[in-house]
Image 1 (cartoon, helix red, strand yellow):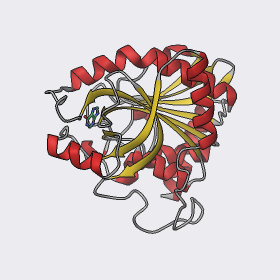
Image 2 (spheres, protein in one colour):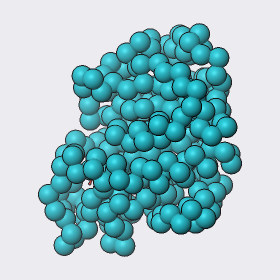
Image 3 (cartoon, rainbow, N blue to C red):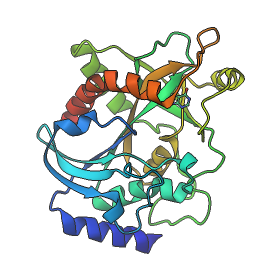
Image 4 (cartoon, rainbow, N blue to C red):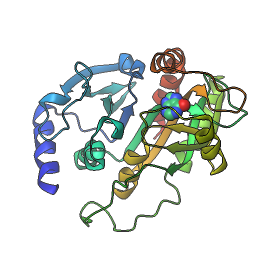
Length: 270
Ligand code: HPA
C-alpha cells in the first residue's frame, strides 16, 4: 500500500506543478463546481497508476488541478463507490494519495435521501457528523503508522471551524442550509420504508451510499474535513415515493450552483 501511494503520487507530481492544500471530492453528477475552476490541468483516472479501474464505461472521472477563485485546489470529479464492487481500500485510495500530495483540507459533496421530517427536497445539508453503516470498515487490517494511528479519534470528524464558516457564507448569500448527520450505507438499493425508519431511529438525518469511507480515511490521515449533501428525495413516513437515479440527478443539478457558491467562498477562507 505504501509503495502504491508513492508510485501514484510521484506520477501525479510529474504531471503538474500545482501543489494545492485543499481537495474537493465531487459526487457523481455534482460536477457544476468544475465549471468554475480556472487554469485547469486534468488527469483522467484511467491514466493514473494504481487508481481503481472504472466499472462504468465513460464515467471514470478525473483529477482536476486548478484554481477556484484565487486558491489552488485539487478536485476529484467522480468517486469510487463501494456498491460498484471496489474494496474499501480502493474506495479510499484517492484520499491517501491526496494526503501524500500535501492536501490538508478535504471538502466532500454527495446526494442523499432526507429522513429528518423537517427537511425538503432540494435542501443543502451541512454534514455535522456521520454514522458508518457500511458492512466493512476502511481501516480494518494492518495499520500503517506512517499513515495514521491504529485507533483514530472521530470526535470531530467534520471540522467545527469549517461548519461555522460555511454557515456564515450561506447566510450572507441567502442560501438556505440545514445541518445534520449523514448515514452511509452500501446501496445500491434505495431504502425500503422500514429501512428509512430504522436509519432515522438510530440517528441519521440523511442516508446515502458514499462519503463515510473517504471521511474516515481523511480523519485517519489527520486532514480537516467539510461535507455537504443535497437532499434529493425523502425517506420520511407518508412522503416516501418511488425514486430513480435520474430524479436524484435532476434535483442535484438544480441545487448545484448554490453548493458551488458555498464551496468557492469556503476555500478562500480556509
Ligand atoms: N438513499 C440512499 N442513497 C441516496 C438516496 C437515498 O434515498 N438519495 C440519494 N442517494
